[in-house]
Image (cartoon, rainbow, N blue to C red; front, side, top):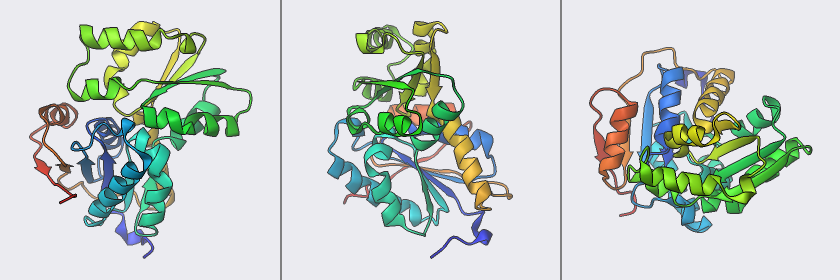
Length: 273
C-alpha cells in the first residue's frame, strides 16, 4: 500500500541496538517538533557491532514489523551496524508500507558534497567497518579522497554502560585515536550513533585539527528533506512519544531523560518470545 499524502500525521519510527539512536531521535525532535516518535532500542541484543549479519537482518526485520504496527510513515535505522548490513533487507521487507532511511548515505553525501576533506577517517563497530560500506560509497562519489577505517569495538558498550567523560573513557578513546591508521586524517566520521555522546572527548583529543562529523544532525536534516519531498511533514502538534526497549537497562533510562525532558515512560517489549 502506497503512502498517501493524508498520512503526514502518522508517527516516525526509529530503531537502534540501544541508546545510540537517541542522539538521532533527539536531533530529529529538535528539528521537527511536530513529528511523533516511536523508538525501539534492542537492548537485549546489544551491541550489534559484533553480531552476525544474519542475526542483525533477522532482528531488524522483526523490529520494522513492530514499528509498522504503529502505522509509521517512515522508519529511520538509527544505527550504523544495521544500516551497513541490513538496510536493503529492511527496505525490501517494508516495501511501500513506509519509507526506510539509514544513517550512512546522508553522511556520505555530506562529506563528499559539503566538506573539503581529502583524507577521511572512519571509526565504528566491527560490523560497520568490516562491511566497508563507508569507503565504498565515499570513493564511488569522490575518487580523489583517501579513506581510512578503524574498528573501535569497545566504545559502544562503554557508552551503553555510562562510561563517558571520565578517566576510563578518555584512556580508551585516546588509545584508539592515536593508532597509526588515523595519523594523517583531516576529518573523521563517527560511524556509530553512540559516538556523539563522546564527541567532547574526541574534540579534546584533536583540539580542532580534525573536522568531526557525527550523523545525528546530518540525518535529521535528511529526514526533514525526504519527508518534505514526499509531502509527509506533519503540520499537527506531536502526540506522546513512545519508547520501547527489549530489555531494561538503567543507562538507557538515564539517557532517555537527558535527551527528552520530562518524565519518559519506558515500555519493555520482547519481540522474540
